Image (cartoon, rainbow, N blue to C red; front, side):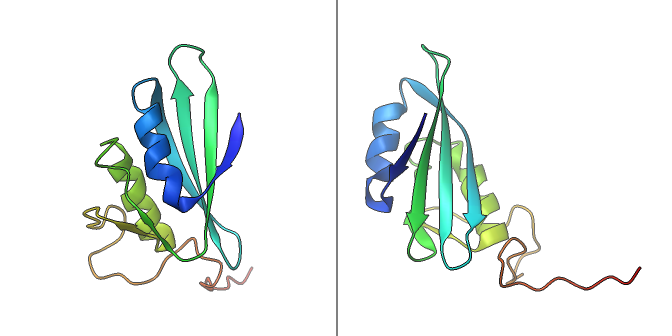
Length: 116
């Protein structure tokens, strides 16, 4: 099942789902002009996956790691690779060196051209 969600309700959704679902991952996609986060939850009782898609107007959203602690690792990864700020989370680097200010999965970042 997939459902759109607004950034301002993702914390309420996490609160409602935390006892009946497990957070499997949070993925981030740069759609060229906006970033979409997809929160992947697994239902314990029905063995179904629920994906909540959140389109961000800005590159920030409140953390859900205070509600679902394992979300912090996914939030840190998305911050490192896409530059999304998760308000209220301790976002020390997970994958990139401290102070690194480039976001490798952003479409605006130009990669090195390799010659054959």
